[in-house]
Amino acid sequence: MSEQSRRPHRPAKPYRRPQKDPVRILAFEALRAVDERDAYANLVLPPLLRKAREKEGPEKFDARDAALATELVYGTLRRQGTYDAVIAACVDRPLREVDPPVLDVLSLGAHQLLGTRIPTHAAVSASVELARVVLGDGRAKFVNAVLRKVAQNDLDGWLEKVAPPYDEDPEDHLAVVHSHPRWVVSALWDSLGGGRAGIEDLLEADNERPEVTLVARPGRATTDELLLEEAAVPGRWSPYAVRLTEGGEPGAVEAVREGRAGVQDEGSQLVALALANAPLDGPDRAWLDGCAGPGGKAALLGALAAERGAVLLASEKQPHRAGLVAKALDGNRGPYQVIAADGTRPPWRPGTFDRVLMDVPCTGLGALRRRPEARWRRRPEDLENFAPLQRALLRTALDSVRVGGVVGYATCSPHLAETRAVVADVLKQYPDTELVDARPLLPHVPALGDGPDIQLWPHMHGTDAMYLSLIRRTA
Image (cartoon, rainbow, N blue to C red; front, top):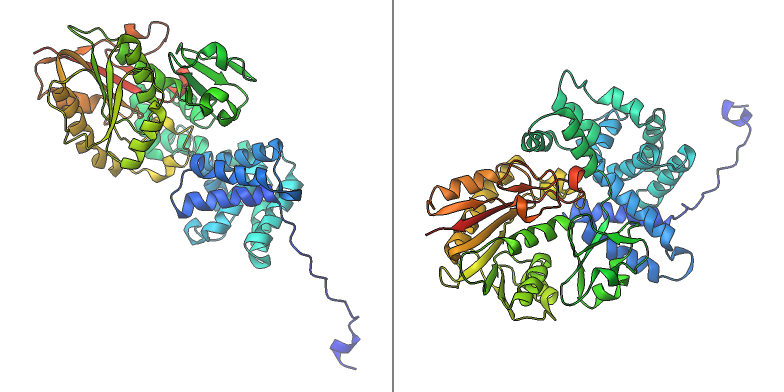
């Protein structure tokens, strides 16, 4: 009798169809869109969730499903750097040799294991089932093996293993622990002015989910109306701001649907308010928003201008973004105009405006709470690419304002190369100007910096890290 014939017969293990988990499949699809198409999660996720809510049967999402999918996507993106370091310690090859879809599943699993309260067994088994559905049985085994290694330590335990000691390399330590690229850590640290506590607070604030903030557009809606919404509380600093403390769906707010209110970070509101409140020499009849897309600041400025009988011109280079500006301003109670124009080649005459806002394109390092994937896409060379445009737009703003009028130069980045360096360079060419101390214009907002410009911070103000410099033409 042969050796093979003496072995007991074992029936083949029956094939088990992978169990589809709609929540994790949706989260995976969102991460793939972010990776493959350079999409932004805040643009990709809402339509995916909306479609899931409209389904019938077991795949239909309820509020808890939507909340879990949102946490999986944003949590994974925010902590991507940390999870990459952990996963790299658990695989036998460089991460660049791991297929991106596999790495997405591993990152989702790592977040469930290290960043949520999902039980270990459930996190691993759900991730393996997801891998079977979207990757196949072979790669699901690899996912299972890696995540079982990840599960051997909690987050603190892993950070002790994969992050270099602070005393040996402070920037790299902070980069791994707080999941930011090293160059971003260095730049933010420079902007803050040193000190370990401040930079750690800022980096941690970048990894927290921001509240939804609404703006009641003056003359069209009131904060009292918005405060009737569930879990709504007043803003911290802006008289027009209302925060939805439990997330909330802005589209369910009647005033937002009607355009009388909008979604707008409080830092963005404060920039518009500071410019609108800046003292002028002479008339106050014509305002310009020179980089108006997608329209949040323009809508607030338009409403404030209407209260004073002033006219707003909102200019935006990209036609589709100019359309968003027009939509935001639709229904404004005063006169306004929206045009699609290149701000470096303005179609208006010099010296036309009393107030000018130029919120220039930038790296967006001040809004990493809202767009966590941006930290992994930006490179130091992006600063060089934006620099000529930022300077050209500020020169346009200074040319466009009349003598005695005020220009507001704003960025959603605290990087010194995009803020004070731009202002200092351009003003060398404009000796007939003076900086206006912007801090007294926001009297209830603390810790605005040394002045005369303003720097807001997520960890200090609960806003995006908006920057504003006010400049008056003197001759």
